[in-house]
Amino acid sequence: MSIARFWRETPQRYNLGGSKCSDCSTVYFPPRSVCPNCSSHRRSIGRMVPFQLSGDGEVFSYTIVHEAAEGFDMQVPYVLALVKTVEGPMLTGQVVDIETGEIRIGLPVRAMFRKLREEGKAGVIHYGYKFAPREEDRAPDTPPGQRDVARAATPDAERGPTTA
Ligand SMILES: [Zn+2]
Image (cartoon, rainbow, N blue to C red; front, side):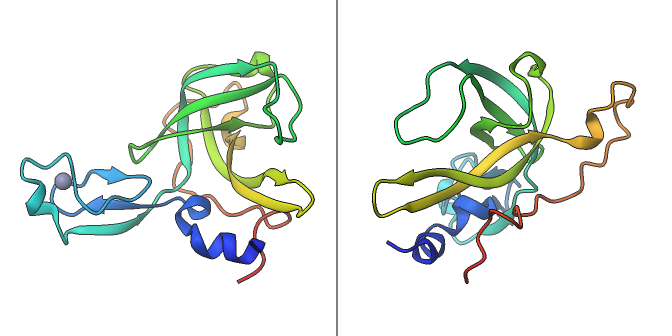
């Protein structure tokens, strides 16, 4: 499977495209066609609309992994976190650009797109999201509430998908 095909077939995987219930406004990622939150599931049928997650969130919980999984080209130890997005859905992913000692619950992070792994001789490269601390939040004196959380995640231009 070519890289371009992989991207075409899994668009929601790299652009954080979810869905939103126009009845109760609950956001889902991955997208759902029916809203389990609505009292009547039937009511939400046809009322789910595409919704783009911003990629912003904060660390809800985390674990520090000391052994790399086979096929994953990553340095150990690394941080794996459960991230609560500002829109609500929980995402799991590696947190990069951070020392393991810096990770904490509540740390503001932003999704970015990175190479996840390469498969064997074919060299198929899978991309996906990882998280990095939001730069504007790194300064220790930044007062909460003055953060720019509206900026949407943009694919890493260098390593992200360039094929259409
Ligand atoms: Zn709903």
